[in-house]
Image 1: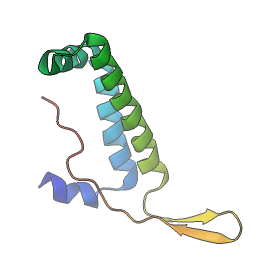
Image 2 (image 1 turned 90 degrees about the vertical axis):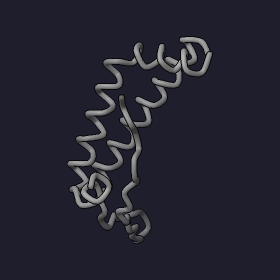
Image 3 (image 1 turned 180 degrees about the vertical axis):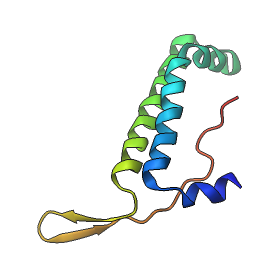
Image 4 (image 1 turned 90 degrees about the horizontal axis):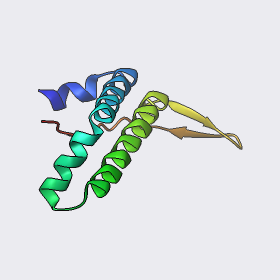
Length: 95
């Protein structure tokens, strides 16, 4: 049900959901970094780097989803760019 309804949501709504995930991951970054370190046997610093990169990517793609929501975009030099909505399936799973 989730996968079907995700593609039907407006681009702005999908962006809000991804922003929500990024903000909450940022609030719990230390907890997730410790969890990654214990699961992989790596250091907590490596876990923090990975969590920070995930947060950065979530914010990036949330902004992208909000800006390019399946519309025709005007380009330089009298060209058009067509953005096709093709939603990603499960992007993140939180416990």
